[in-house]
Amino acid sequence: MINFHTEDINFKVEKPIKTKKWLKKVIEMEGFELSEINYIFCSDEYLHKINLEYLDHDTLTDIITFDNSEEKNLIEGDIFVSIDRVNDNAKDFNSSFEQELQRVLVHGVLHLCGYYDKSIEDEKQMRAKEDFYLNIW
Image (cartoon, rainbow, N blue to C red; front, top):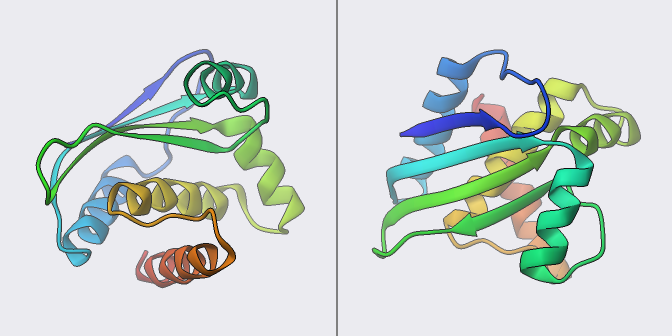
């Protein structure tokens, strides 16, 4: 089950059913089974507080993923997304808001599937996976 929530902003995913089906397909194609993912859409300020409190990072970010899975092939997590960052990134990368949001949503799922983006090589792999799944959209 994939759930969409908001914290301190008013936001709705434009195509919620299509988006959920797409993300579920990504999970299945990666060889995992979906238990539950909660996407929590929020502001920069809200996500910055989480970044400080839980990760001790004093920076703005577009997404923070918490993996709550207890079984190896079962996906369960909470994914916080700053709509402020998605908006700014869309402008910075000359992309539409919708496309940038899709990239961030699949990015969180890929983290739950075991992909990382801390090293240059990991980031290249993450971007390639994002592009692959964005093309499936």
